Amino acid sequence: MILAVLMLTICVNAQTLKSFTIGEKLIGIDTIITTVAQIPGIVTVDTLDDGIIYSIGFIPSDDGQNVSRVYKVDVDRLVSELEINFNIVLVPLYDKHDYLLRYNTKDMKFIIKNEYNQYMDRPYKLTLRITNKELNKIREVE
Image 1 (cartoon, rainbow, N blue to C red):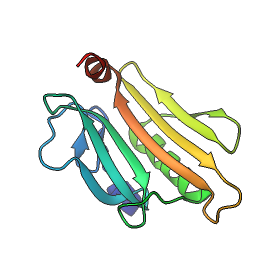
Image 2: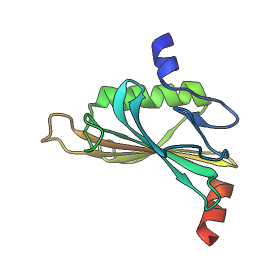
Image 3: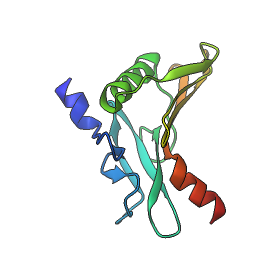
Image 4: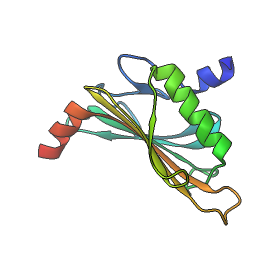
């Protein structure tokens, strides 16, 4: 459990994921290959014109270039770690296979999108997005 917590670096007030912090100016690269909740993948950030990070995303990838699908246990582990580390409860929307898990605060939006394909060995296509709503409004008018 300690290893899992270390793999998902979280700061409650400033939403930090793998050294990227929403609301801070991006210094250096905007994409890293890493693991989140023991899932190998790519963490990316979106910035305003002045370089302030307004959104952080994660997609699974075994090779750092192509999107990889995951197992249900991976989805469950990611959800659990986000809920524990951010002190939130993600609410599922849609049906039990293709679904969105969502949590909204006054300032932040957390979304995990899952697309299910029963014919694939790893049936879930997963994306995670954490967005600051106020900074996103600024981005929309830039």
